[in-house]
Length: 424
Image (cartoon, rainbow, N blue to C red):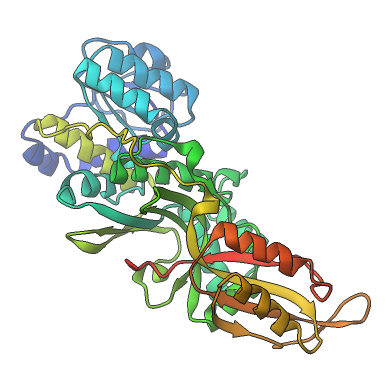
């Protein structure tokens, strides 16, 4: 095993605590014989494993059945995985960035070398979503999937919703509790979730691992005001990764989304993860659990090891379906939430409604003139909040530009996407 951080220590502990049941299910004992980490942690019980600080040397050994890569980062982790596969040694990794950015190459290499690459732990922690897509739902054509796949963002939005916190306050609390890094950019900007969605989309639709084609938007612009309005309209705001098969191609996007409160996934709170998959045979199936943490992620790592030990592990089929295009976000479709700061004057809503109507965009719901606020010029203004039916993003962008140019609009329009998470 390369690495001795939180997840690696979780693997050590779970292998030790559950040795009897793991051995029974694997059909043989799983022995951790070598551990390499750039830093020794004397307080960690390594069992009978030998320790080294040379992670690359371990990955080049030819006498191992499997190398578990848990060091994090990208460059060194990628080198470890490549080295092992070139030696015809199977690999289990929890590294979502390496799989999302290099999955096509690495799975191809594993096929050529006749070995295995397992990455159940790379997406949604303890949730067996990779197994679900490649095994349990193998008889389905996946129509779409949507997931809360970053616990940090979900914790922040939950705190904002339930406690009325601002984004900055909720982020500070997440950092205090250890749910967010000192530099939280990868999480709150949506990059971590986009890595995971890349993997899910590749397995669900056979498009290959195409991280660059995933539209990514974070949560830092969400306000308590938007969460309040969403609640009044019957929605909760969740940071989702959504991938959907359409006649034109595959949508893959990560962004804040208004989800109806009646949907189970809208009520997955805190640091929990959840993935909703709609198959054409099974219908909607929801997978929920701990998305991170040492023992939770270790559960997924060991699941791959057990599959290897009992000889039932296999690679996903070739994921390079060139018949499916990845759609640019401008060609995707969704409903929209618009919050328009406008002067408190008669006829403003009518102007906005007319511009929407001219583009055949129908209004599902609206909140108007809830509270007047004075600007620096002492002119009263109010937020006009509109929920639209489904429309192509390119069309919506054009309408927003027109509305923004109205003289009565006194600030930047807030635009969030709405998804019913239905098969319609």
